[in-house]
Length: 220
Image (cartoon, rainbow, N blue to C red; front, side, top):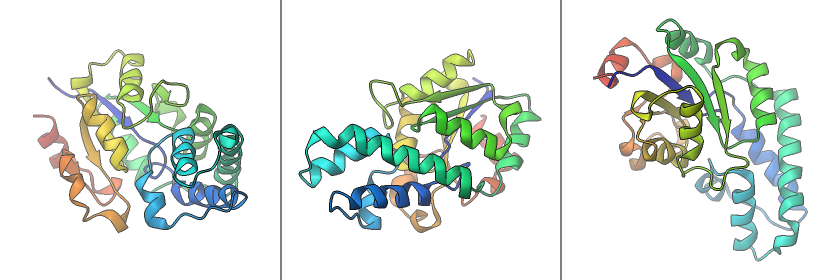
């Protein structure tokens, strides 16, 4: 089955927001006497904020009664930081144009809330090219569950086997593969040599490096 749809993750792939999420987490968690190492933070990258907070609150034995407040505070801070400091990742316009010129349907599937997705689309200016967005915020399960990708494909009337996904996190890659979609992984440079990326169909150091040869290989 030939590819005709591309679906992008957002945080860390289209927008350099992961450092902003980490800073927001640090600010909020400080109120609870919690500090995460970079290694600890990385293990839960790609999860929804609710699951991320719940995971670490249970790890540090913090009561569940604070979960909702901590989640809201982190999201509010991140949205403010993205609006004020957000930057596009290299190659965003290139990769969007690459698939737009091939008449691909283009979607965005993220663990982040829809209001942050809207901010990121405005920041990057890719709104006119996006056919559908899907947020895992209110789903029963977030990434690595495939539902957010399946919902995005369904919104574009695409068969999962016709979809190519771009991700930067392990949880996102697993979600895309579980959805029976092909997946290109573009990990942070510090994680490039991680053996876990072997589950992806292709690994790149940047969106800018994706070309016709890669496309032809994936579209067989």
